[in-house]
Length: 193
Image (cartoon, rainbow, N blue to C red; front, side, top):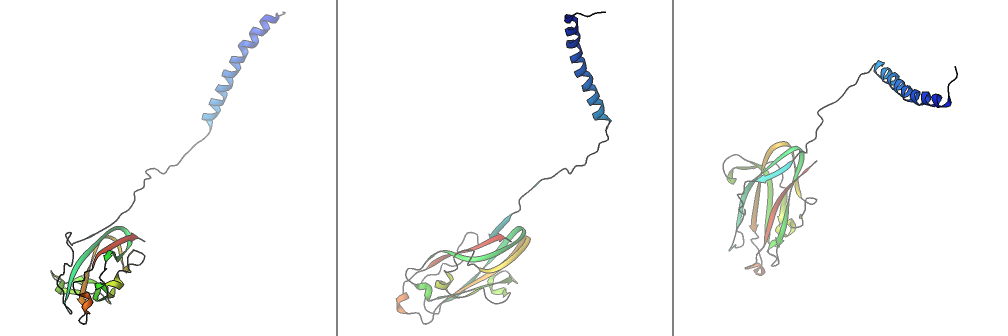
């Protein structure tokens, strides 16, 4: 039996889709015939920690001293709380120090860290040596975290410590400091370790 060229072409065209269909069935069957398994690690997420710091000053300055005379002195306490997710170092420094009249050279400052055993500063117990013992003028050079005083390490959760800050106008202060003034801001900053 002899086929015409036209019949041969039709048969060829019909065979092509059939061949493609059959090869797809073979591949699909082969793919599902293999063994398989998998493992996963679900539930991954990330959350940043925190470094928070506060104090109990109720937005009031520790000192508002006026009319000071040579030898006048006072102290006040402030409790600082660091609430951190991990170890952080707390340092004390000053900002915005104004001392155009140079009273700071005659104003002796002492900063100690410790704890209160009662309700007020008269019950303060120092942990050790003072963090600072010098003039306000010298204290003003500690004006950033890098040059900050102390280095109290809060190792997570809310931890508090108390600072006693004392001043005394030099008993031998020169007449040039009469009516002089000085001011500063005490800053406690915590940075994660």
